[in-house]
Length: 122
Image 1 (tube, helix red, strand yellow):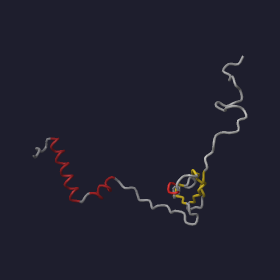
Image 2 (cartoon, one colour):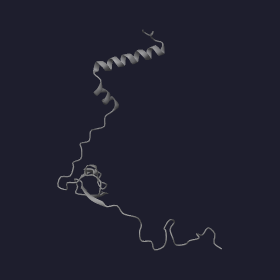
Image 3 (cartoon, one colour):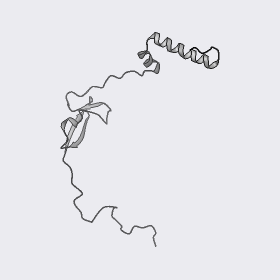
Image 4 (tube, rainbow, N blue to C red):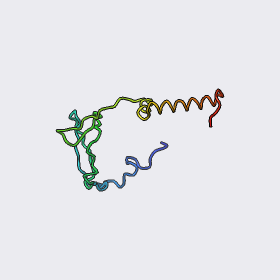
C-alpha cells in the first residue's frame, strides 16, 4: 500500500474541469521595439489602451545594459559617467575655505572643552 499518494492523479492543482479550453480573456496589447547603440532589439508589450505618454521612450537593454530607444536609426547614447566623488569632495563643493576653517575651529574648540584643556566660552 502506497502512502502519501494523491487522490486525483495526473491533474494539476486548480486545473479545473478536463477539456476546458478557455483560460481567461486576454487583454489586447501592442508590441514596442527598442534598440540600443549596439543594434540589439528588445520588444516590450503594453496594454493597447495605454496612453502614448505612459509608454517609456527609453528603457535599459537587458542584453547590453545600455539605454535603448524607439528610433532604430538614432539609438540613445550612454550618458557620460561622472567619476566617484568622496565625501570630502562634496563638502568642498558646498563650503568656502573660510567656512571650512571656521567649522574646523569650532569643532576643535568643542573637543578641547570636553577634554578639559580649555574653558568653555559663552
